[in-house]
Image (tube, rainbow, N blue to C red; front, side, top):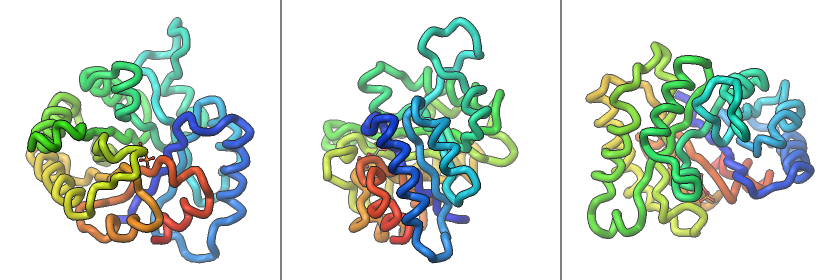
Length: 246
Ligand code: PGA
């Protein structure tokens, strides 16, 4: 299966900056066959215009979040249906920044996942990961398992098994500290085993947390690392393409 590389632009860029980055990505795409699937997730504000720029190129696009509510009286919300209208392919759910800054819980992430699978054909990218304290206490696997159980156990996996999981250790996000390929591979294989017990076999598992052109190749060479979710290093077209072609 193709590796999947997703750039998460978070709230780092303004509207104009987002358009410029999308244009740069298109203009600077190396003339080499693309063996990975590539997508970027701009802010909601920039999403429609970035989608216009990327239409017809090899780069897919997605959103960084959505509400689980159906379109209606939900002030400030963004519906899954509106993302479908914009031809989004992906929607990131349960990113640790959503959990930490907006109080999102596993139960909310589960509701969002269920809504995504029941009402749309979007590909959800569900994020899990432990804190530094949990890793140092030897509870990394237990934490991730708890998150997976809470989010996935009541979910009916669609026949195409399109759910993507992203393992993002919180201590590695935006810190420059990256999980070693061995640590990441061990967690991915643990996650894959658990998914197997639920019968979720085709699920892709991405790694995220301080991915850079320098470490991307080693991470991607591991058998259970199906791709990368890239934050900071996706904000420059050249570093993003270096990761894609690592
Ligand atoms: P980072 O972010 O690459 O800047 O560490 C990754 C993420 O949060 O998805």
